[in-house]
Length: 265
Length: 220
Image 1 (cartoon, chains in turn purple, orange):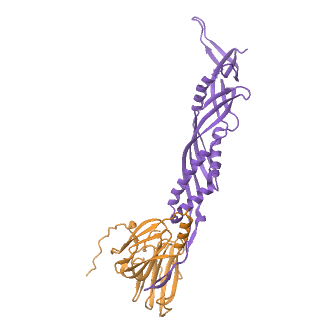
Image 2 (cartoon, rainbow over the protein chains, first blue to last red):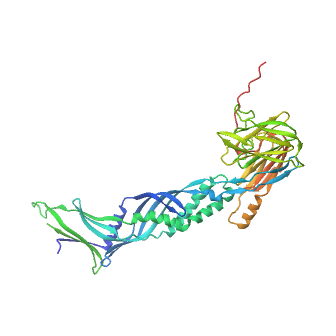
Image 3 (cartoon, helix red, strand yellow):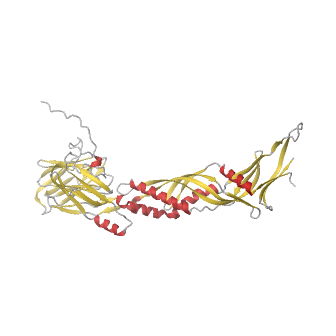
């Protein structure tokens, strides 16, 4: 029988856990990845918030957070070699009465490599399971929640929105290319088709997934040694040492609970 | 790639007919100044008597940059009376240039289009372009450049066909005919200059008023 038992029911867990999630600092990262046939260099930041908590005793012994929201801001740029659009105007001849026949040479329009910057902010909602991890670190007992596996992010809607943003950015960048005028829409359509939803998903997934894989947040921090105030005047305060701490999810007749058992000396 | 006969880009051509025999020296300049810079390279055209046929023959000169200087290829030409010489930039890396030449009885300039010459320009960007004479004359006109819906196959086909057709504006005196024209982006427009005092074909939007310093009075 443990010396101390503390318990948190699901109602309380729905206050404590989201609060713990909300206090996580902003996450950030940068790198490069494939955007369809192109390579994009990117930087991103994200914050986690909200979520509904369900305490599920063994099996599977997890804290399940549904509707957890990952808000992210993404900036990236990629280069497009537009040489695939190069075309040549045909030789044109006219006959002018007072000059004679004049022919232009074949004039070839060549296009450069352009860099397309894209900024996009959105969010994804996901469900993740967490397991409890109790450890003594730096004189404190910590009860952390550690994500189980890699949560699956449903990013198809986000990818579609990002593809729209990429399309707008491509059109804006192409507008600055000399001579692109007649084939502007064609060029934009060709590039967007080359990227596609699959290309955007291929970029977005590897950017966002690291923000939620390995996700850990702290639920309880308790000093190993703490002072207990005297129960009655005249008695001396005593220091209590938490020798061991265990956190478990237990089924109870009313609501499932997160229970913390402590032994003291 | 602005519309400006004073600064010929690679989507532009300038052609001049040479009606009389003689020796012509010309230079290429990245400025439209009528007086050649002291170290300008001089190229020549030898115009011989006797024409090449009823329509004359066309000789093409490619302009490029070599060692930081504008060069003509070929640098010397021998042509027949009534022949036409056409200048065009070799590629997009060639900066805008003007062609200006003088002979004993004949002179010409792409920066002052006078007679029996042609300036052509490929319009690559949709929009309305009002062209004027940057040399101060009243000659002007408007060209409406339309874009296409490249997702429409029929419109694409019409556009491709239109690239092989040219529109011609004839300038006689101070009058340009037609003074309004509609083309598709990518189409070529020719200005055929019959006889003027020396005009330019310049997009009004790039006309910048320049404060001219007082001209020195000749002494004596």
